[in-house]
Length: 106
Image 1 (spheres, rainbow, N blue to C red):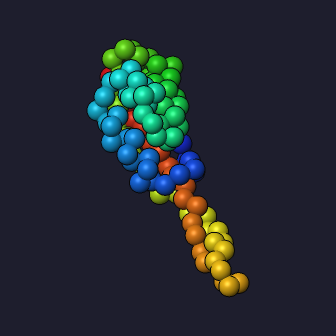
Image 2 (cartoon, rainbow, N blue to C red):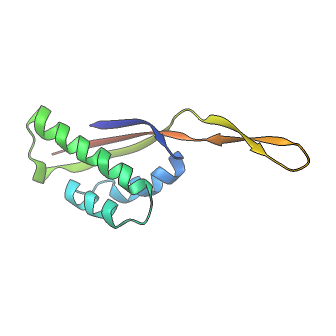
């Protein structure tokens, strides 16, 4: 398993990528991430590689037999920022952060 905490981006957009790779083999998931036009796919690809490396190095599992058992995204801290409006007014916007968790099994 590998967890990336406080990844820059909204959970909704991360979930679009994770929905595609759930249940795939690790090699297929890496191909899906490489071919995806989404910018979050590259971040997810690195987490998959980390989870596969953890499985092979720490738990002595075969890399070719691994598949993505769980791909979950959670909401991190939403950083409040100022959004400038006209006539001297200001609003509030959020810079979302996400926690991405990938679990691989043999």
